Length: 113
Image 1 (spheres, rainbow, N blue to C red):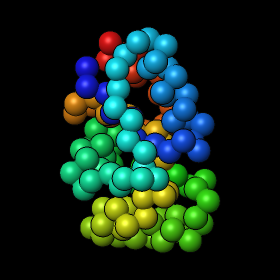
Image 2 (spheres, rainbow, N blue to C red; image 1 turned 90 degrees about the horizontal axis):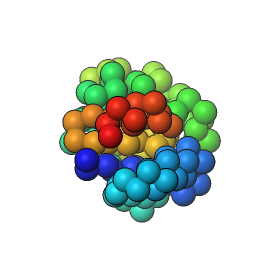
Image 3 (cartoon, one colour; image 1 turned 30 degrees about the vertical axis):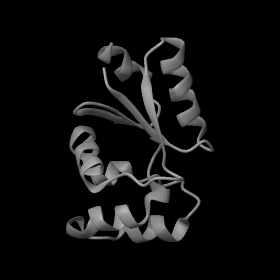
Image 4 (tube, rainbow, N blue to C red; image 1 turned 135 degrees about the horizontal axis):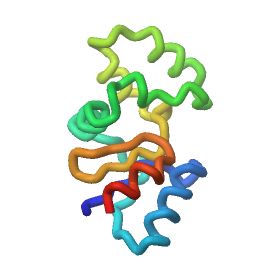
């Protein structure tokens, strides 16, 4: 397994995901989205694995303006706008090769073991 966890330390679901993998002694790479943005290729791969870009938007994010902007952005422009406004991505984003989840999803992660 090649697990990557994208998130921030402020996200409780990200911390829970880290703990979940640590408890099972599964090695993972943590990418702090506060320090390093997710790349266009990674975001596209996650969107394909999870059912689309709209599912990556956290409607409860603190930046109400960015959430409203993204909700009204045409699909053709959504990828670029998400890359510009990564503070509204749902967390954690957990990748295992071509598989991915958004949010805390231990039931899915169990199937990866």
